[in-house]
Length: 116
Length: 109
Image (cartoon, rainbow over the protein chains, first blue to last red):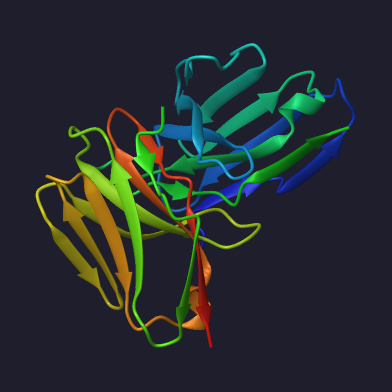
C-alpha cells in the first residue's frame, strides 16, 4: 500500500488562483520531505527540501515566494503555488523517506496542475 | 546539467525474455542508487536499490548491477512479464536525489 499520500491528484483552476498540495507520510515520520516538478519527457527536478519545524530549502531558480512550503508536522508537508499562471502548469510530486541511511524515498502519486 | 542519464527512452521485450534497462551517471560521489517503476497517473514506486559498496543486488526477478568504474547502472528483469510494462526511472543519491528521464518498457505478450 501507499506510504506517501499526495492530494489532490488533479487541479484545474483559473490564472491568479492559489493552489495548495498536501503530502502525507502514512507509515513513518518524516523530518524531511522533497518537492519535485516534472515537465513532459523530462526527469524529476527537485524544487525544494521541506524541513519539519524550519524553513524549506529551495533549489536555485525556484521562487520561494511563489512556491510556499510548510512542514508543520512530522507527517505533513504542503506546497502552495501562489497566484498560479499557465506557466506553472506541471506535474508536482512529493517524496519522503524514513530518514535512515540507504533507505529509499517513497513518492506520492503526484498532482497534475493545469492553470487556464 | 543531467547527472543521471537514461539514453533509451523506450524498450520492447517479448514476454519471458530478459529486459535490460541502462543508466549512466556522471558523479563518482554518488553513494546509493535506486530504480523506480511508474505507471501512468501514479507516483514512482520503489523497486530495488544498491549501495555503492556493492556491485549487484537481487530481488526476485529484478537484479541491479553497478559498475562504478564505468559509472553505469543496469536493471535486469527476468523473465519479463506484461505487468512489468511501465516507465522505469533510475536515481542516484548525492547531496540530493538525481533522477534519469525514464525508459518506457513494453513487454509484449
